[in-house]
Amino acid sequence: MHIAGVDRESNIPLYVQVCQYWRARIAQNQLKPGDQLPTEAEMAKFHGVSKITVRQAVHLLVNEGLVATRQGKGTFVRAAKHQWDLSKLYSFSEDMKMRGFTPGARVLKKEIVKGPVEQLKLDDSNALTIRVERLRLADNEPMAIELLRIPYEPFADIYDDIVDNVSIYGLVEHKIGIKPAYGTQFIEAALPDRREQKLLEIDAQEAVLKLERVSFSRERVPIEHTISIYRGDQYRFRVTLER
View 1 (tube, rainbow, N blue to C red):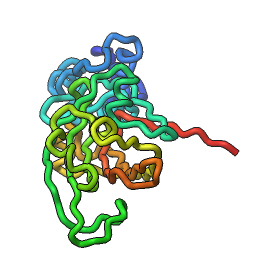
View 2: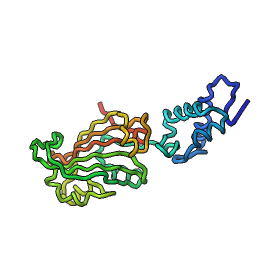
View 3: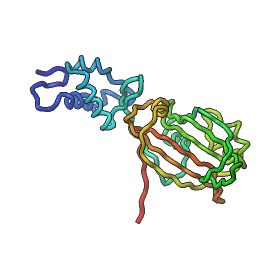
View 4: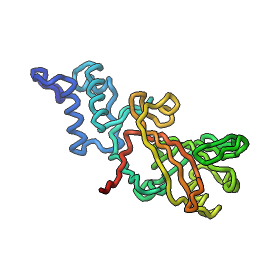
């Protein structure tokens, strides 16, 4: 007996059949990136199966990278992942513009703090740094949370200009006259905490990518130390290796 893509006489588990049905619709472009899937209840009724079966099927689609769930909003077809070349020192804004997206930044917190920052070679307990937390967006969709620290000197003059939708690299280069020349970066996988889940609109089980970067001027002077939390469902990184 066939009910909307489900054959109860088949040896294939029902949740796999449900997954296959929606996978095929996505592959055939009947559902496009950004389209929302029906709710659990709607899918259960459509296929004549339980909500648990639907939940298992959606979990498979999430694991395959075809869809993503957003807290309080539903399940959506995912776009292709953004590919980031790690051999180049790009700012988030530069990277998004090159890909044809409109970059955005929402300042969550901005302050001047006192204390040493090893990564910026600031050992003095009275050293001042500009500390900024921002939510980074691409076409108004949340992509990353960024926690950035910059030495107060010589960058004090950019403090008031750090507002929503402004490139800090751009401020450093055009207002201070210092251009980021190279950097070091570390990447690790992690699970998001509750605040990160809310800001990035992801579920607890969705992995994130934690990037830690220190960039320098040509004179090897540290410019910024940044820890960023990127949505794992939106990115893949590329590195060119030579031997």
